[in-house]
Image (cartoon, rainbow, N blue to C red):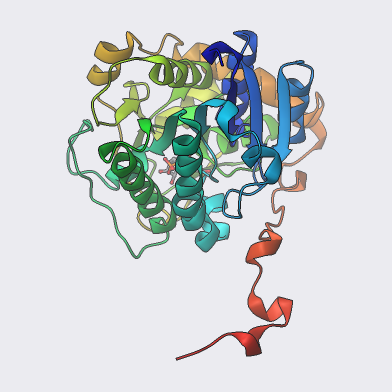
Length: 361
Ligand code: UDP
């Protein structure tokens, strides 16, 4: 079978970054199968994709056995991208066990699929593997400063374990792999209720609410526009020669959270109050990628200026929230507390009434 006739699987393809990646691949003519549990996706993201003839959606959770519609076509997959995981702190902490299993069990299942399909595999890892970094900016060689017991551990350690699995598959010749460490990314298709700083600040400012700054706002992040991130992922998948090493993907322009909030407010041109809320536990103090490896390997660097990206993102949120949002709506009315319910195969055993069947001690 010709490689170009084969399928591309994008796990997590209905999510924020995944939906942009899917669109980019569809525009390039790839046959894309999106596998997503819709835990943190938005229906509008899918609507944007279903208009393409070369797009197919399969709803499934990668912590469960892969569905037969995927397994039965194993040999057809040429490329497997794994973007499946809740990624904003409030969302990944809502069901930490599921977050950890998504990275570990889910990545293992997709790696086995890649092995059986002889497909190339790309894991999206995260700057969270550096934890609260003592090295700055962060190069890929830095091993990180991560708590394995704190509230962020389900995501940080899950992704670290996923990287381990991915490189072990490659080391033993079972799969051809790539690992991207994605730094903070923003843009259209973010969920307004995700609880991230960019979505919160923009939605709050548009709604005329106080903008929440956690701690004193002196912590730093570096924000990459989503189409720049998606382009880097596509290039990383396609590059022919790669060592067993992860690649940082992000924008090196670093600013404090307070500076970001002030920039958004200035661009909006309306008076908005800033409110200091408590700093979450284990919140990293600073973060900025060194992207020398991505530049050399992929010929890539971000091209979207923060001001341009924020403008596009603000326009998109304004449209999403309704044009009269600044006058009538408050952010609190916008499904902010949407409840997360674990997938059926992972609900507590007592809910399934089988506690007595489980051996203890
Ligand atoms: N943050 C904030 N106000 C908010 C949401 C987040 O000050 O309404 C801070 C958060 O404490 C962190 C930074 O902004 O220091 C980035 O948070 P985000 O959740 O976007 O991503 P993280 O990089 O922490 O995963």
